[in-house]
Amino acid sequence: MTAIINATLVMRDHFIPDGILLIEDGRIVDFGEMRKLPTPEGAEVIDAEGLYVGPGFVDIHTHSDGYVFFQDEPERASLHHLHHGTTSLLPALYFSMNTEQYVEAIAKLREAMKKPECKNIAGLYMEGPYLNPKFGCDKTNNPWQGAVDAAKHGPVIDAAYDLARVWALAPERENIEGFVKDVLAKNPKAVFSVAHSEAEPYQIEALMPYGLKIGTHHLNATGTLQKYPECRTPCVDETVYYNREIYAELICDSRGIHVDPYLLRLTRRIKGDDRIILISDAYACDGPIPEGYDDVDDINFDHTGEIAGSKMTLDISCRNMIKHTGASVCDVFRFASYNPSRAVGLLDRGEIAKGKRADLILVDYKMKVHKVILEGEVV
Image (cartoon, rainbow, N blue to C red; front, side):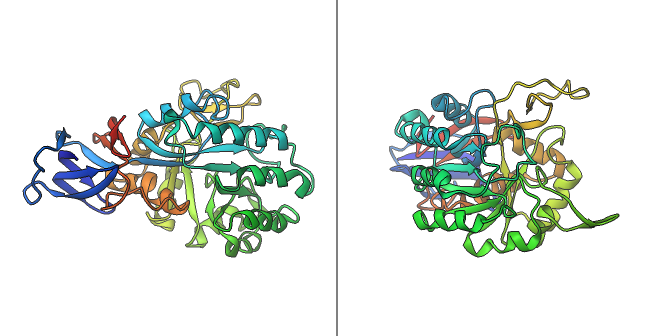
């Protein structure tokens, strides 16, 4: 048995100071105040020295370590995120891949998941194939601009169906419902996300009964419809705000470039703290830095100067969210651990509770990671 003592335990909506947490066989078996719960005799002791102890981060949307893609060097990318506190993650595979490339990448990640270096890979996030070709980085390289075609997407579904926890799509694509039904035929528990889209509310809401419940990088690569001169009409962002069931992913960089800090605060006010998910959306791209962004070091740009994801890990995202919105340490653990784990069905982790996986991190008040514990073992 392992005992973490002198900890400030981060619960879903409060703290337990001077706390103790007990781990056995990779699970949390008990926790509480040290004055009420004695340290078991013979237990291996980890002294937290007053640090916050919270659930490991769950990054449901990340492509890379900021420099190499998961499908190219999965061990390197996985360990990079793990050392920054991400104990569960979903590598995201982008729409720029054709059928064969998708299948090859899925196979490589499936094999990587068997390796100890990749123990934190918990499935896949399919950012495609059917997104709106108007939006996103590298949009000139999109082999999926034509009609929804089962002959093209069938092999991708067959390769990924048991690993893919999220399928991102643009609801306005013609015959997209056929693709959704093909996915559900192989995996009835699949989750869908509205992404890279200019869909109208009725198009998005029509897919909610099928399992659409996430807004991919909310306020990024989402269209603004204007049916009438000088009159804004509702589109993706408004639909995500309006529907309580939909989680809003947020990329929270240091300068508030992906999402303006005022909009981050607005999203908290509208969605509530139980429907926000922090993602890193780390990507690998070395395009030129546009004029005026010379001091930006946590996001990427493609060859056209378009924003191309981030170079962040979730500890950095949490730190930025605290800065931009006044969120507490307790709040950001909810955004980066509990909420994402619930959104994608990883119900055995993401919080401190008896019986949950002992995926834990020790951080200070600036969210600097001091120690990572994965399934009860110190990394």
